[in-house]
Amino acid sequence: MNILVILQQILLQAGLGNQSSFWSFISTIIWLVVLILFFTPYFQNQMTIMWYSYGIGNFLNNLGRLITNNMNLIINHINQLLRSNGATQPTDKSLVEKTIRDLMEFVVIEPVSAEPTGLMKTLKLLVTSYNEKLEDSIKSLLPNIDRPLVQNVVDAVDGLRELNYIYKVIMHYYRLSNKYKNPYLLIQVYMLLPIIREYVNALNGAITTFLKGQPVGDAAGPLTAYRFMRSCSSSAELTHNVKDTYIGFCDFEGRRVYVVKARGPGGTVGNLDDGIIYLIEKVGVKPRVIITVDAALKFEGEKTGSIAEGVGVAMGGIGVERFNIERVASKYGIPLYAILIKMSMPEALSAMPKDVESAVNEAVERVKRVIRDNVREGDDVILVGVGNTGGVAQ
Amino acid sequence: MSFEYYYITVVSLVIFIVALVIAIIMNSRYYKVIREYLVQARGAEAKGQAMSGEVEVLACPRCGYSTTIPFRVGDYVGKVVGETCPKDGERLVVVAIYSLRPTEYQGS
Image (cartoon, rainbow over all chains, first blue to last red; front, side, top):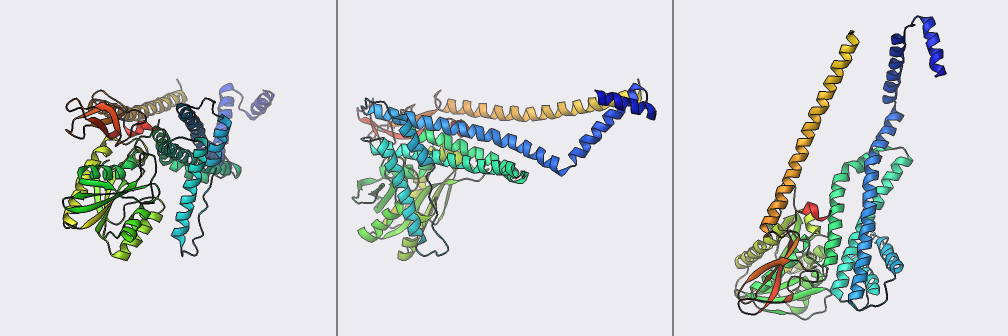
């Protein structure tokens, strides 16, 4: 206030004596300061960082809460499973939490790709080792529990691990940006936030769905294989030692159809490549065509449940299984035919929507048409239902 | 009243009206989105015969009779359940499990 009095005295001497002139001068000065501040790069940077930090910070808070809620959900589910199995002792919550936290931090180190020879074999080994580690750890928490139920918990923990990874990556850029006062890192994350949010919501829905043992949208492939098997005659299962994989055969209008899918109803994607290699190289099946049916991500504007056909192997993931199937098919000159059931990422990961369930019937009809068109009576064909078979048996 | 006061009043009014227009436009967008969600949710409920959420379809493998019930934890596609067919007494099989809710709501 003293400064204002002194300033007023100075202005009085300078001729700006009356009150209104004095306050208009002060307001002009304030506006000038604000303008100068707005044109200062440092101030702009600070404001940008503050603005984007607020949005990303809120997202991180929500994601953190989501991870905690889902972890509690999994712990309670494990508790319930043990109780339903007759366990009288309460579950050691800290042990369960520690195991899940360890699994969430578990890393899979990508193999060296500078020398690509045998890369796919190494990748397959790493994926198998990771899946076994995950299942063994959950199995140690759930002794004497049926395998499908353990597999469902494994899938849920895998989803939680993915959520935790997203949290850590975003937190990394958030902290880094604030540390180096660099708004551009934050801006990039902020621009991707709507897409990341959608994926996070989908994963959140997937964890609940997996725990309930309900089919997700990605189960469209195995469900197509299941329904096809039910629609043809003389179906039987082939005995084999391919882990987590179902191989059956049936007669469809005089053609022998071998059906390969992950073994349900526990949540797993099976080893479909091993199943196909077993059929061709061990059993001696000579298929006229290999048909793969899988859920595929739709473009914005495409309808959920719309079906596309093509050539190649319809299969997602890191590409190991697809590579093995392509290799065996090219070795024996077997045409590859693909049927894709379109859906969005949230639909693929959440409980199967009605549109996808209806599309499965259409996919079965398409499979039948492809077999009629490409395979003569008396010939063999392999049908592969690709995807997570959680909630779908055989 | 001096020119400054007129000027301030007019500028304030213009800013106020622009803000009001923006608010109305933005709100109409939100209303549209909310209305679409409500229509979808109602449609899904109507389709599911007043059932919402997850449902399962039980079918008779012999005569094809089918019924839709709310999803029960532990059931899976291909499971032979305890219920029997009212027509021929055959045990029913779960042939489909799906969600009637729009996918946007499932994660929340």
